[in-house]
Length: 148
Image (tube, rainbow, N blue to C red; front, side, top):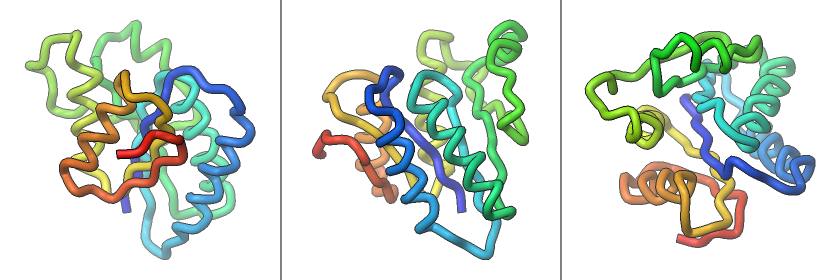
């Protein structure tokens, strides 16, 4: 199973949101491997990575993947984190740089079984990713207040 995440780059009540994310993850126990696709940008992504690492400490069948929108060495060095097991660069090299993150997010949704979101607002990249998952009939859980 592959699980990806999207959410706002700035959050309040991180502890409460973290507990919600971890509760969802605990309820997804599986005998098969679980891959977590993480974008590594902003507060929600950092929170999700911590929750996934916590999950992996309890359930050994998990791997964390950083899905990078850029191959730029400086960008990758600034995103280096011991939380991730591997880095994946989707086939988006022909996409203009200003669209790379949104294209990467679509790739993550397309290649996942479940999207866990924290979306409260009707603007920004997180809501676009959630709406994309909805249009593609992907399974998703929104822990925020935004209703589709």
